[in-house]
Image 1 (spheres, rainbow, N blue to C red):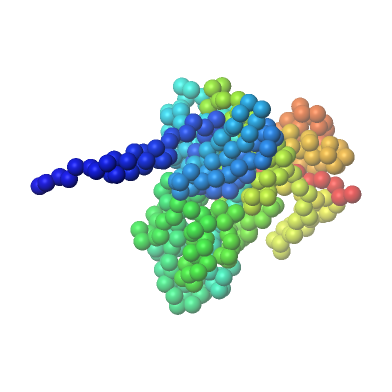
Image 2 (image 1 turned 180 degrees about the vertical axis):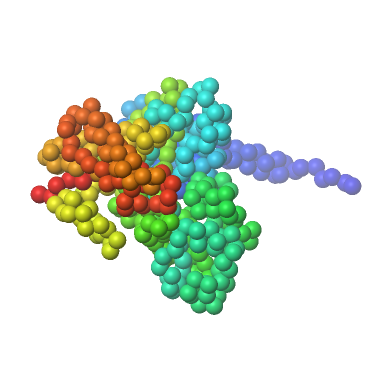
Length: 438
């Protein structure tokens, strides 16, 4: 075979192409991981942070790769550039472990295997490394014409495993069900697999898989046969279903049910950092994200902020009259205190919420006398035991608040009544915070 020699024009074209090709750029900060976090929320938080440190407007632009974004600002020390790469939660851990990422954005908690693999560098489960930046509700989506309004977690498992294949089996039209799911690299998929499929069900192989929440939701909204799941910020034109767990009432994701994590498919969104080796800019970004201004951006992005808000809840028919009397002159704050180990050890998010609650009281001109803590327990072998556990939980939060300068808060326990999850669900063990109406 005869091979033609490159002409002078051909060599020039090759050289020009080489010079114009994208060159690897060194970023001052790289965030890798979840599409749920990285599509909108992380760029908004980065922009808010850069506006604080910059001398001019923040510029956002693509870098030629799908689901990646660069954000740039000019400072007194030169240009600062940040990369947000949103290819899935598992990719973020790999980037953090390899040293490419400064921050791992994740829509699921770190896995035990990941924490163990990273342990020589930092404890990713510690407050120094694990940062809850927002609360999200895993949204169950159908076409707007679908007559279904609520579904149980177990029924969802049967649908997505292919055991229920036609909408007529759920009281809808005689129409086959088409499944839409996130891809295997997604923390949204990991959350759905953990909370819905569990060890009982496996995803039907013919389900359509997506890297993007928004694209999945858009396709469901155009398909009368479709059902899918996404982050709450990506509901868009689809219809949102209420979800129940066990004998607990079906709840739709909203500000109160998601922020309090009572909604059965609520989940935390994280930023993970590498402990003491974390660069200063990454630490500053995380602190901004966790603070009041960062949490305001969380709300603007469509997720649920952790800044406490007072809400007058609507009780359903199953709410005991004694509880309605107890809370008659109160509003509920959109914060629940939950526990990481045993019955009384507060988790990483709860520790930060202590500071948020203290700040809320200061901002609103309120005092500890205005608060009421109500503890709850999961079902126990004896009602008295459940009552004792619920009171101990409330007392634990009371003591923690006292250490932050909020003394002598009133507290009580409500035992094993008013569960928000099925029997054995860790969400049942909680402490609600109520504040007196003015």
